[in-house]
Image (cartoon, rainbow, N blue to C red; front, side):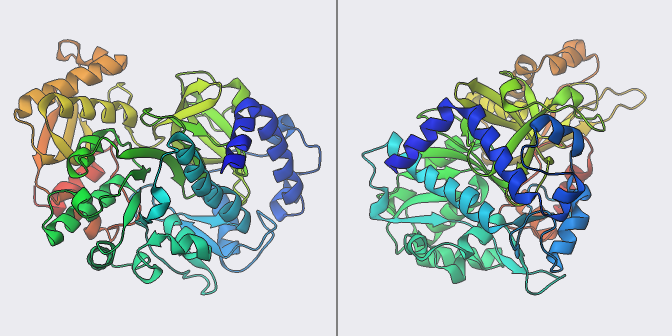
Length: 494
């Protein structure tokens, strides 16, 4: 672990050199693939030549190649044999994405990220007793591909868990046969039954689903809080959604000043970031030696057909960028759909600011997920409320009516005064987003938000109805259409 911290310090100090060397390694390894031959990959290819030759790709652009690999062809996008695919759960759309997972991406990206997470944590907390117990991880499931029974597809968490080395499997819980169950509600019950018998010292997973499990454990055991079940619990490693709105929820169920929280940025496409400082919320070190070469699209150019991308040495603090990656699994100049904002350039640290398709801009207000989560957090703090989930969508203008935003919020603990909650939510959005504030001036374009406090289980019912209960599936926070919001209300008879 100490040796790895030294390596991390090296890419903190020499970020551009590390990325340049990694770029040339990717090109050299892929030059004999069908993709590499098509776009003229040769040793010594410069980044500028790469950007001129290779178009920015969406999933739809790459899918013809991915489909062929799933059917059994090899050496198309990447030279190594690929027989695992991560089923993307970045959205709750009906159409899934299947992201290739090469042996290199599994070992040098996903597993390396997991080991680095432990190394960084131990470096931050040398007094840790983490390894005296087991780590509880909540994953999804996998199954053979419909295109080829020799190929397996599933949540990236399931792909990782299935391929863990023996030593790693020995220090985690629950056992594989439970961790990879596909029926979520049955899995929860089995997880409770097994894990309450263990000495669990750490948790990892999506906050939403982790909380569902912890709450069920308290119901079954009759305990008041999780520390009465696992007194040595000290760490929750979380990702996929911003933790700010959930912090109070976890504080109430794990009431300890010694409980630590570590943010990671682990997606189906790769492992990108790890929180490397104490006390920094949602701010992560960009990991530069995981077989991922980074480019960034300024968001004011995102809608251009082939926007100009920036390399790491060209980014600026505080601006939102769409993330573009080239990886050791054969994703080339691939837009993964996330937006990030740099909080530090020495070293490079980022915050996830949202999704390129998850925003509200029906009236020029340009509200992004980061804005919404920050405002929700402030409203909860001001009214002593605790939420479990939320989504928001526009209310379009009619002949005599102004437009606005409509929110569905599921509270674990309702605010003492819902109107005060709405006021703080609105004021916070106005404070952090000048475009929203301008549209709210004198209710000129936007009226005050409409907030519905929906019954507990509302969002779970919607996910169940879509067959997306559990795993890494999550609720779309914002949408520029009313599709999600109206579906959720219809399923629950609201």
